[in-house]
Image (cartoon, rainbow, N blue to C red; front, side, top):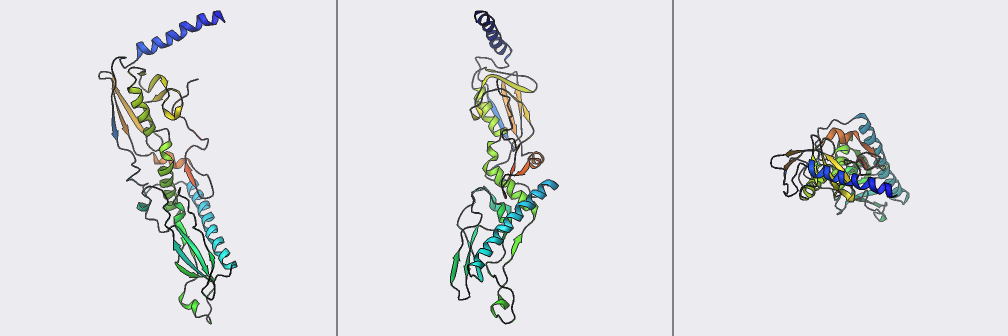
Length: 297
């Protein structure tokens, strides 16, 4: 143990000296960070409508919309089993909670279905369908009519002459995928280890007065521990994936940083699409946390 201690102390001292002597920032000078924000604005932007979705993504959307269709169909059958012959669609006051979802021009709304019998008596009170606050893609599959019949046309039944039979509208898979992406970015995309997270990391690091060094591709530090409470040894100057790709430029003369945040890498996000539940798509690595910063061992 004594021999180990004699070896360890010089090594620790050498590593510390290496950082202090090779650091691109002076220990006595605080660096500044300039942010050029060209990225996706959660409060004003929406996912583009012209994205080219893969066959895999289209198939995922097809599976999810089938589930939504079956859910509405089962609700209608439950009303019929309760003796209902007429359905009334009631709009819900529940807000989906997804930012800018109205800009997606979705036709469906959050609603519940009430069932009435031949005597126009309420026989079954429905609950809001798909009332989750985490998605809006379910609005691409909905009961078409506000008032419709569960019985078929009958020449001897005057009501069936003027009231439509209940039907379900299924909109395009591309619209479903776009709405899914908007939901994901709005609610969980901000937790990705990309530009927004790195911005805070960089600003914190720059205020530490010289506890870092910069080479052609990475920023190194002795104790980077700002993002998610983890400890990292370095992070890249440029990252081209995720919701907010970025590029960091460092001036060795002024010892200041300029960080540019860009629009999402749509191709990267779309390539990671998978169904987390029957109707909920995510656009991230399925293995969970995809580390942008290597851990310090």
